[in-house]
Length: 114
Image (cartoon, rainbow, N blue to C red; front, top):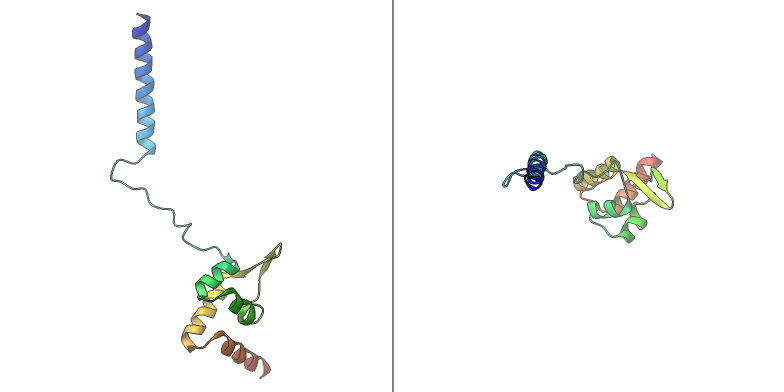
């Protein structure tokens, strides 16, 4: 008799566990929507993200872009962070005028001197 009562309790517990799992795990063939926050870059981006987005090397970044076309907004430790909107603005300006970063620097200096 004791084994029947134990088996009954085990069966009830198993049903509860199954119901909880059914609520939390999607059925076969259904996928939960992927989190979109992982693909969206943050508001402040680091040098690695900037160089990948602009398609340039880190040397080109330090020689032609850093401090001239883009200025760091925040520095955490020794790592500078840039506004994503500034990087995107620079990319659209570069694509629109079909110029390299050196010529964009010269253009910006000429505008500042006028």
